[in-house]
Amino acid sequence: MEAPGLKIQAPHKAGWKEIFHNGKTWWLILTLVVFLVASVAAYQVWLKPKAETGITSQLQTAVARRGELVVFATGAGQVIPTTQVNVGFDESGTLAELLVKVGDQVETGQLLARLQTDKSADEIALALAEAELNVLTAQQALDDMIANSALDAAQALLDVEEAEQALEDLQNNDLRLAQASQAVAEAVASVKSAERIYNSVRLPADQNTIATAYAELVLAEKKLKEQQDKFKDYINKPDNDPGKASQQLKLSAAQQAYDQALRYYNAVTGTGSELDLESTAADLAAAKAHLAEAQREWERIQDGPTPGELALAETKLAIAQATYERLKNGPDPVRVALAAAELANAQARLAVAQGDQAVIDLLAPMAGTILSIDASLGETLGTGAILTLADLSRPLLDVYLDETDIDKVGVGFEAEVVFDSLPDVTFTGKVVEVNPSLQRVSNIDAVLVKVQLDADSFSKPQSLPVGSNASVDVIGGRVENAVLVPVEALRELGQGEYAVFVMEDGEPRLRPVTVALMDFTSAAITSGIQAGDIVTTGVVETDQ
Image (cartoon, rainbow, N blue to C red; front, side, top):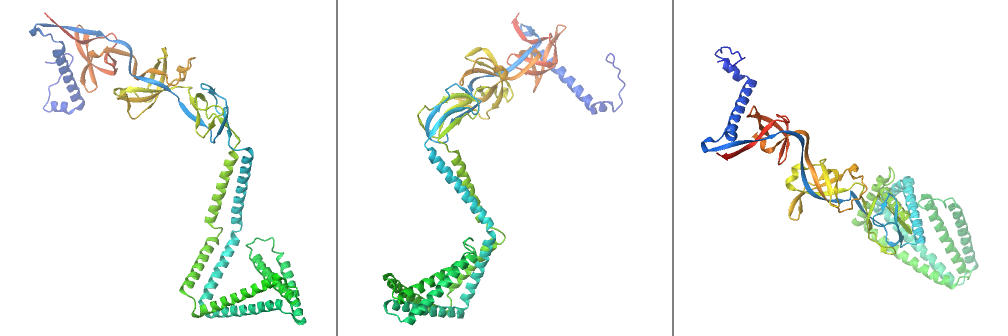
């Protein structure tokens, strides 16, 4: 039998196979079959009268309507500052002025209080001058180190040469013996000279001795003057200048020779003082001690250098070579780094000294409201906070919600707030933070969120003190101008799939629908039915 309006050709052997191999045709047939079976089953379960039990069923219906559906989570909230800072002085002293009170509105940089420090103006000036001098000294040391790097390298090279020569001399024992013999001979001569002067002071001298002594004094004085004139060319050069050092040694030797010649002349002419008598005795004793030391040294080196002496000379040479390698291409990086660090430390201390004041001003770090003051005029203060400043321009609320409402809250969700102190005013805001951890409040786990009030919502004459309590509804979902039906009208076909029975010509017909949002009483339908459709909500059974 053919269906009206549908022409079916006689199938050939492979016709049904072609139908089942066509994917779209197969799923269309399967969907129709499932829908018909579900309709029959639903009718049998929900709508068929139960005549055999003597019970009649009365069908309950409702009219689908247009409206708004809102799903929200309700919690308790409390106003907290958006930003809060504690403000205090960096130094100790006495509170001299307090220019604000609790509740005052202040601007960024506004003067809040003044502190009389424990330092006087003179002490601060002295510390500042010392700090400035330390910076100049450290800077000069660094500059000199860089400027004298070539001289340091030359001196290091000279130290290498001297260390090499010392090691070579130590290894050449014949030369050491010769030098030791020379030292003994010089020491013997010094003893003889000291004995001559010692005796001349105590014994009368002939005219020839006096003339000789005078001639020696004149020559010594001439050599001293010549050496003094030569040294004038080096007097303004740095102390580490090799030329200056050499001339200084020559000048010292000339001065010593002159002093000795003068003492000898005074001795032979009988003009020596009691001090000269003591001095010549001391010089003779020193000369004899030096001779004894030279003789011991000569005896010591008879067997050549000891292993310790060689090791010490080699170590000194290695140190000198390492120093030269470090300095030959510029200043020592380690010394430069240390000098730079000392300069930085001096500059930091100068900055601290420059910041020291006899009277210190306390300025507001931001605009806000003074919440508390923990000091009074004349009180001795440390470095702790004395003021609490908060930004209350856009109040923030800590809101606690039941953990079962976690699916209805998220950053950016809208919120409606009603304060206990303003029950007739509804403020609006948004969730700006959701704490990732549950909070334990009165032995109950709760979700903590922060809600920021909208600027337009808060532009009202009343104020909201910190700690104000409020009831907060966080909007978890909102659908406007949707078709609404009672939740009892929904029939669940599968996971997230629903249908409703719609009355058509007095008979219920099952229609699949799309549900956008639902709460405990209503469901918002976006497709499948229209406003004005009559839907079934259940069956009421009554006895016949």
